[in-house]
Length: 137
Image 1 (cartoon, helix red, strand yellow):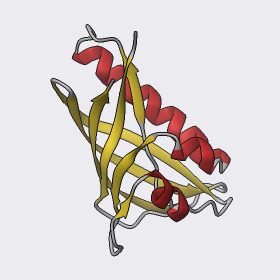
Image 2 (spheres, helix red, strand yellow; image 1 turned 45 degrees about the vertical axis):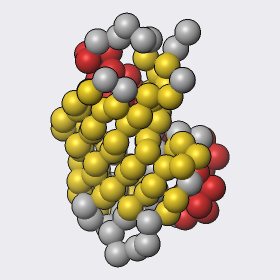
Image 3 (cartoon, helix red, strand yellow; image 1 turned 90 degrees about the vertical axis):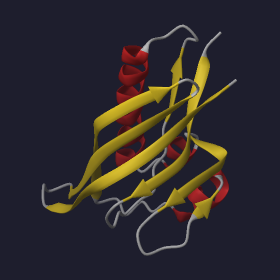
Image 4 (tube, helix red, strand yellow; image 1 turned 180 degrees about the vertical axis):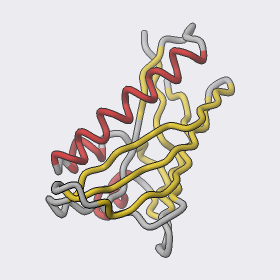
């Protein structure tokens, strides 16, 4: 039986166009390398959802009680509120890069950087993010 990791807190250091979530599945006896590989894999899947403009796909990665804390905005609480705050402008691509992932029992912390670009290659934004993961199940 697999365990799920889901975002419970997501915070960005700089302005960001769209909210995004992550969850990862790992077996109960997985080591840190498995958790790190899974988080990186899910980040790629999440970017793919976002880059396709598939808000339904992106929203499923948040827990029901997740908190999204973006710059210059009130926190969005819960999957539905986060989903309602997502924007698909059709012109933006997202790249995620995990810079540090630390696992602690049933939780993990991810520090990373993101970049948004237009489809023509023009860079729009670059910044940092923090994700707190919680194992569910």
